[in-house]
Amino acid sequence: MKREIPLMIVTVTGIIMFVQYFIPSNFSEDVFTFLQDWVMIIGILSLPLGIWSLVKANTQKLKVPDERFYSAVLLIGFLVMVVSGWMPDWRSKGIHLALFQNVLIPIQSTIFSLLAFFVASAAYRAFRARSVLATILLLTAFIIMFRLIPTGPFADINNWLVEKILTIPNMAAKRAIAMGLALGAAATAIKIILGIERTYMGRD
Image 1 (tube, one colour):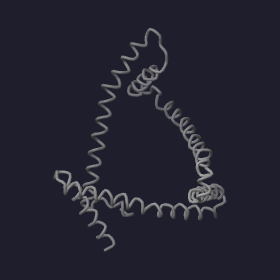
Image 2 (cartoon, rainbow, N blue to C red):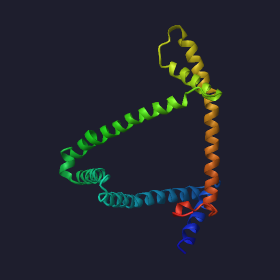
Image 3 (cartoon, rainbow, N blue to C red):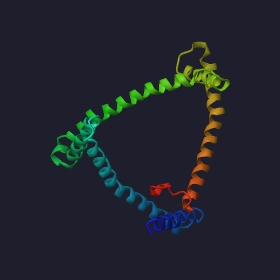
Image 4 (spheres, rainbow, N blue to C red):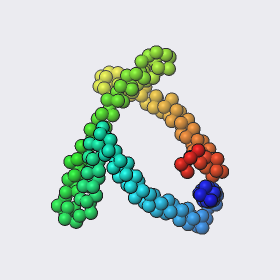
């Protein structure tokens, strides 16, 4: 029953959500709203489980010498932010907001700045003209980047090329990708409703 009940719930809920989309009525809208509210409730209830998993995993890593420091920093930062958010005196003095603005935001900026170097490295490897497709990608990237560079008398020509690239081949590729994503999502949803796809239960 541990497997049959979740499969039955997913199947019934999936069929209801699929059918209500094609039945325009107030009852159908109420069912959709009711199920959406349950999705938010389940998401909120899963937050404590995620916090417990985070604390448990990093507590176990405290026993590993190579990962002890980072786990300790994470746990201490987590506890400080939780306590500062709960304490009315700390909130009134702006301690919680100060920690957010002076610690978390600079850390996020540092991570994104490091990602910029990885993106530049990946672009360097991808833009090597080793084949016809790589050469086309390289030329297109140069044209797009030249839009941000003052080119003097060639600015109008460059802007025209960029507009044509963005509105014709780029838009066609985006629509093809969107169609592929939609078909893939529909196929996955059908497999989940029929019970073929069961990886969400933690096993194949």
